[in-house]
Length: 363
Image (cartoon, rainbow, N blue to C red; front, top):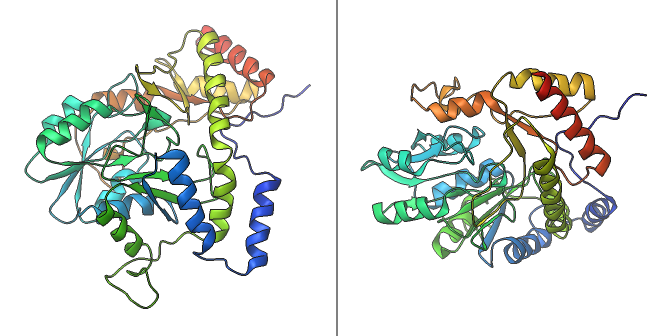
């Protein structure tokens, strides 16, 4: 009997999301209208302790516009991880500033605070760490470092909806934070992003930048972009927002089962005080990671993901020569297993049995 495929990620789109989209289509108001404004208000309340939230058309746009609104531009440097999706460094480069790639620590795959400190120069405008895989970065260490050195802290929270540190939600630490709403994230709007901030000037600049430089029609205050979210996307996001906390609880329950039962692989570490939301459940495989992934797919019909196989500083788009040993190790050894809330108990048991069998046999 063939086994059904277990995907590494699975967006959950149901009847409520379809009904919400149909209602927008029937209204005739498809672009940036009431749904977007309501989504911003609700996102602020549920996920960022009341910080202002500004909806945009993608996570990458959110990073780009957030940096611009914070005053980043040509001649500046922003320190970022190389071990992440390319959008982080791309957004810095798109402002005309220079991304400076720092190494990570291998427990949580987030920026190494000591290495970041060694890279700060008179050109450093800010640090933009990533709450990678849903685990908060070193909020205390990097926050203290930024304050002592007089530079900004920006949060790439693309994968961290509802994550926290010491009971304070991510997205409420930096000058701004960006949450991605791409289909594979912990919640989605189909496509989109949300930028959060407590700085009124940054919020105002964000709202101008996303909409051709205007908040009121035909009153263009600055040169801006067309980075608006549609009401169609916001309607999906509003429904998902009512479900994301429950989905997070299920992700954590799934992760706890994997933690308790996986053998011969390195399971995710969680820092004291950190509220991990398990966008990814990422293990370390020191020998033949790719062989393990292939065996899981070919023999057990289980999908996995490698996030990320090529460090950003070595991508052709940047082509840098920094020595980032922990980044290189992670890129060779990480493997993300399914942890999404659609998994059944049978799925979880099958994942555990497969990984343990393959790992024990040496892939």
